[in-house]
Length: 177
Image (cartoon, rainbow, N blue to C red; front, side, top):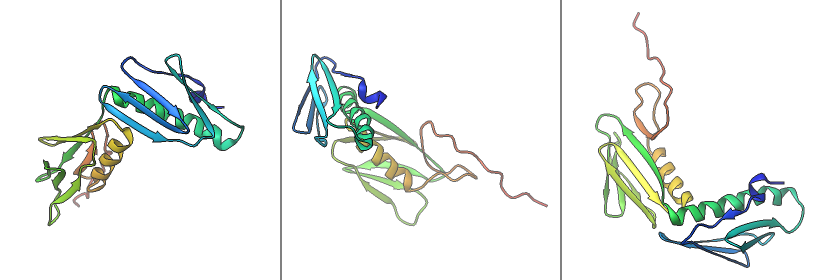
């Protein structure tokens, strides 16, 4: 039994949810998101809520029940209020700029690092902060993770790209004799 899956998902005002044959479409003030789910879990929209029920008993379906519920809740939240993640670029000479549809970063390599910004995401840079926002939480999280992977923070000086609230455990350097 899934604790998350059992709870009905409340649909806020100005939001429309339609579900038929495993495809769920959520339309809201910021746009529209659609996603295809397996038909083993029945998705029913009724009385301003979305209710999910597995069609048969199985361990795999119990796991998917809560997962699908979370996906639909994130879709509903995303079309009403955009998800936002921030990264901090730390290090001397490290910087990031948005040029057209690319994020161009100078990270101490012999060449600038270019990453294409996915469709549906809005990326801005200010001083040493990169902010990515969009309706789809998975796109936002995946893009931010790809940016961070270009230069992970190191434990001695803390140089690199880190999440906004991330704490880097610092190590002590070499001691002089």
